[in-house]
Length: 142
Length: 72
Image (cartoon, rainbow over all chains, first blue to last red; front, top):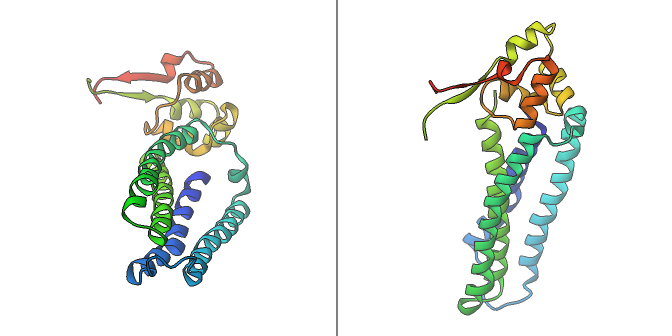
């Protein structure tokens, strides 16, 4: 499996492991409206984002140690092609999300709903980019 | 658009080149082993530049390495 495909799968798994529980918690017990900064909610968000970041760094180190030559190899034309296509689709997902968050939601809601919607747009864009990359690598795997 | 696909003789040419490995071929033309494997299996169509580089490694003209098959 190419190094960049492993990174895409790892990113998807880490999103599921960190932002999955965060958004599940937000759906089950939504933060109280209009109460800012709402420190417990802020703490949960920091835990999800920080945990994702730390685990991502550890995962990258583990992959580099497991296959150092693969990790050192520069991206080739297929890698760049997959990155360009998945990045383009993810960009549109992010754009639509940001338009909703920045131009529609301020007229209908406020506070943590906007924060969480913004975070969801970013996470969905990441899922799109890495999901498409992983799928593209699988589709063209020999 | 009519059906068809690019087929190639890379496996045969690697064999004739002393069973050159996919990694070795990839290293010579700046591709990963997995990308060479994908090209060889017809799952990924290389850029024209990569196709020329592959042909150059085997000392063959492009059309002896890659062919268009309209059978699809």
